[in-house]
Length: 237
Ligand code: C5P
Image (cartoon, rainbow, N blue to C red; front, side, top):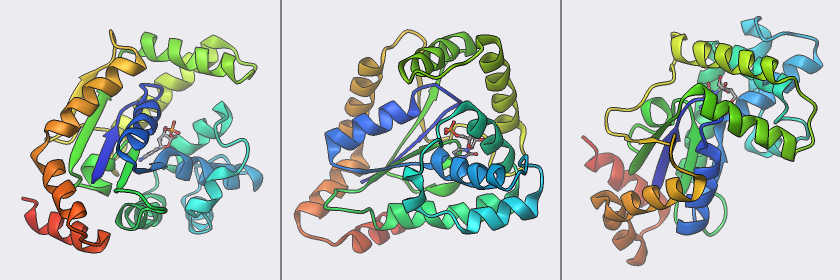
């Protein structure tokens, strides 16, 4: 089973992805960390993310194993991540890493769940189930502030808000793979829902999806993951 989750900054895609991974025994890839790992390399070389060649070179050195590097979740790295994410060559390089993860999820899992901005539209257009989470800026800002406090990070709220506005704007307006809901995504408005309610809603939708029940039958019958993936691709419109 392959699940794609997209949405703007701090809307809860990561929390939902981790919840679904635990419920359905899926490997999870937070694709934002790939862009953050590129940004961390650019920052280490004293860049600001605007040079496409520098960013592309950095992207070539990033692997799924790089994602446990410390400091990737900081606000500074996130800001530069949204700048390197604008460059088509960076996106192209990271595309292969993401598809490979979905094709061969690590461990004894029943598939993969990826979250990001363009998973359902570009990275995995044939995903079995797609979600797109939405929520107004003030709600997402409150969640981000809570998260930063819990991590003990020092921050200025007005700066975090300004950064989120700018990142949303860059992610939505870039030419290459902008943030958008896939036409076949389940759109969940998280304004009035806590994380648990979003997870329960998503679990219901996964269980009721005809494509996931078909995948489960194939898995129980022992089809290897490659075969299951091919079967799904052929079945896709
Ligand atoms: O989700 P996160 O905040 O960690 O992502 C950091 C940045 O990486 C985003 O603001 C976005 O610009 C970029 N990104 C992307 N496509 C993805 C995941 C993240 O462009 N699939």
